[in-house]
Length: 281
Ligand code: NDP
Image (cartoon, rainbow, N blue to C red; front, side, top):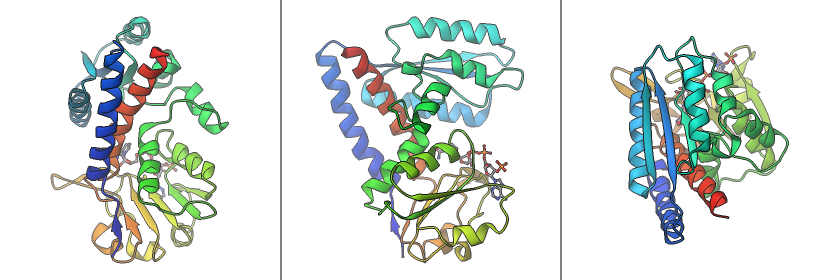
């Protein structure tokens, strides 16, 4: 049976350390603030935004959620970001994705100054990750690395396979694994014979968005299987991995819920605190 990399336990530990950092800043009269912009009524986004607000509250971070109507224009949204860029109370600005289709997501993300881009999606932060410089790292990939390290999963020289090549998960996690000296393969919907790749993986990251996509016959015995997927099946949240079968042969596994998702919010608050710490210096 696999060792469970428990996001709930790891996130609780992380939050304790983060609370101490917020308190230390407060002692120096430095506040920490996160502005979250939500455009439209997407139900999943509403839940994510609520959870982000709760995590901030727990840590004593000022959190402000700005809800805008579905028909908000590009100009209105960019003007709001400009205002928040100048607002010293706000150390982080997060635009909840996806945006309604009429808005240009890439242009919106570019508007956020890189120092306050706590999601790590700004092209400058993405570029820094790809060129080995220090910037803000995207929350989900950063959370995955935290879990692998806390779980003492060996990385250097190991074969890592990432299924998915999105800008928010697949590509950045591949880079982070490469930085830890893994040999990295990125698979996607055009990959031929996916299982031939995944069966080689010592570390397998599934970021696909399809329930039970990774089955036991695709997994190398002893592998660390990281399930990023969030899928709703019959009202329940499940990952991309057939957990019941894969946990029998994997060496390590992350559950869904209670895995990577928990770490993502923790890393968002950490990125916000880091931004406040930079401000304090
Ligand atoms: P995207 O839809 O942007 O990317 C999905 C990727 O999966 C694409 O690269 C796609 O390939 C690939 N893919 C689709 N079908 C196949 C297939 N049959 N074989 C191989 N690859 C395939 O999703 P995201 O990266 O944004 O998210 C992935 C999942 O992670 C979702 O369930 C999402 O909800 C979840 N998520 C969870 C987070 C958390 O905190 N736990 C945070 C962010 C996301 P191609 O590029 O060729 O289309």
